[in-house]
Image 1: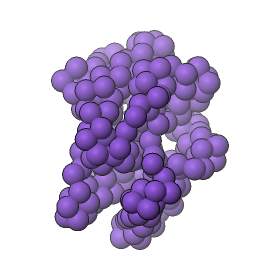
Image 2 (image 1 turned 180 degrees about the vertical axis):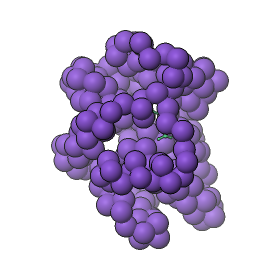
Image 3 (image 1 turned 135 degrees about the vertical axis):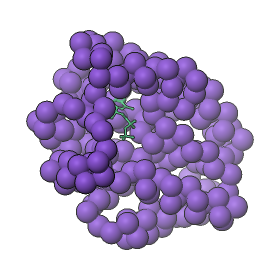
Length: 218
Ligand code: TYD
């Protein structure tokens, strides 16, 4: 197990669910309150991670095997965890990460059908057992996410180009993983307004920080 003093927050959800907006809001709010915050993303976040990300999201790599894809996500995460996240947590910082192993559990374990148990075991091995303190799931129906991506004129990456059945599995898979990990998951209805969503996120983070201060959680 990784020993840590800081706070590790992750964000999960389908593309188009509004993760990035909320991450930016939380980052600037916490920095404004004087906290030391590190903002990072998966896959990427390190030089090696960025190179791995290019392979993973490149549309030319359509024939990549599901297992290879999984190992690349895990490799990127191993690098990010050991080089960035664990050192920052050790210094007592707040780390906000855009996606972490729940993405692999849901995308590769459930939607690709590789098995949640297997992926969880490999993920924990890759990160020396690091588990987020709080995971915000921005839950939004596939049709809404697709509409938003279209409206924003965003190009889809290789994984986002999967057919809608794949995304339905992700939508349901996230809710399933969240229901089995209630102590750290906060499921948020991503159809709510940006302000309302942020209030939910802020109050949960502030509560956690208070609990750390009063010794309720370590
Ligand atoms: P990301 O860059 O986080 O996408 P976005 O910023 O648009 O949310 O992730 C890229 C894609 O990779 C996304 O479709 C989700 C997928 N993904 C996996 O399939 N498994 C994983 O372990 C991770 C981290 C991402």
